[in-house]
Image (cartoon, rainbow, N blue to C red; front, top):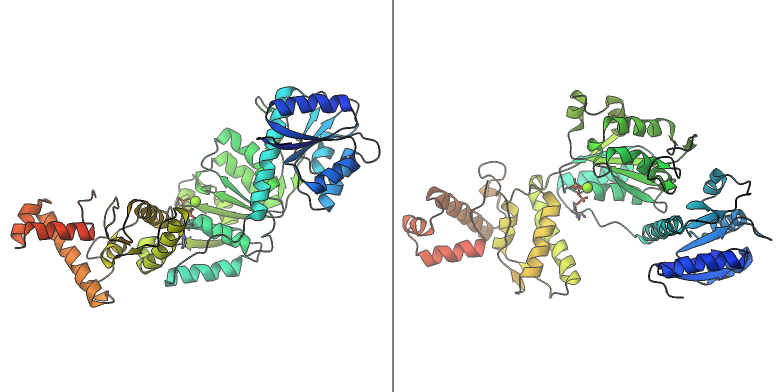
Length: 450
Ligand SMILES: Nc1ncnc2c1ncn2[C@@H]1O[C@H](COP(=O)(O)OP(=O)(O)OP(=O)(O)O)[C@@H](O)[C@H]1O
Ligand SMILES: [Mg+2]
């Protein structure tokens, strides 16, 4: 039956209707299977689950709702689009409550049908990915900061408490949210991420809570809100500091009552969702500036977990580098690579404004670009760790590390002093220019914009 867009099962006792639907779907690139009643449908579904099913509601024997209930009992999570005839007494709400992804009235408009089917197939893919998603990547680090964070995650994960994850960009806030979900009893239910900053404020309400078809211009079909998708699981409100005040008010209501009301539905319904929020903004400050609701802040910040900036735990860098290097060598089919002491030292001294994400990108780039088995210089944009603050040279763990670190610091200092003129610096520190060039290359020292 093929079909590049996906495989769709049509269940209708009227062969004329099936033919019309099949033509529309086939011409749009779907592979189509047909069943004349619910029992035939169950046989086909068991043999090879399609990406979505189109169901007639009124069928002899077992009707559409019966079939949906049957599928659920068998744990077959196939997205379903229901077709209702004009005279059907079923309300749209009944159909949706039964678990259908969308409903259309017969005869469906071609565009509406394709839109609903495409949505259902996409929803199924997301659900499958979620189900297949094994353990989230590990939260690496042996520094006290990371150790404490790991312990806190393990402690709050099993509770229902709302958690606010606070930290700079790239410090692993999403990783923390996924681990909280994974270590909770909700692990087998959906983890649904919402990027609050990326959704225009006019759309966030329908994105979070869903909407009924036709409830506003452009609402061509019913949309299931993220809170409903996450029912029984965890919703991750990412970049929560970037929500408009009006959205904040709506989110607050869900948190208080556990109720969502899709736009145009006219009545709210209950959801059971654990909320994890994250932000790199300083929410207490936003509260004091009246840019963030205080009541929402306290709802979210039941437990606050802080992801530390990488510059505060540079001792974890070698471990992270090893892990990412092995990962990218596998991904890009490269022979295993190692990092020279000089290059590692360079990584340790960088300020990492983009934190672990930035480090990961640097490693990826090095794995791609470096043909040797040893990576001994690395290009990092941005400023090095300010010398003088924090780490002391004397904390170097080996003599070699001490020598290298001090040499790098000395060379940088002298270059700075001579306006990064290599010839002048070489003269001043009494070393051949060729030697200075070699060292700059070995340590990957280059002029960096502050
Ligand atoms: N401690 C860690 N161990 C392993 N990987 C990490 C760690 N911290 C972050 N990462 C990785 O770094 C990348 C960035 O992490 P993540 O997306 O969770 O950051 P974030 O805090 O959500 O950033 P942003 O605020 O920019 O969204 C991810 O690939 C993540 O897996
Ligand atoms: Mg993030």
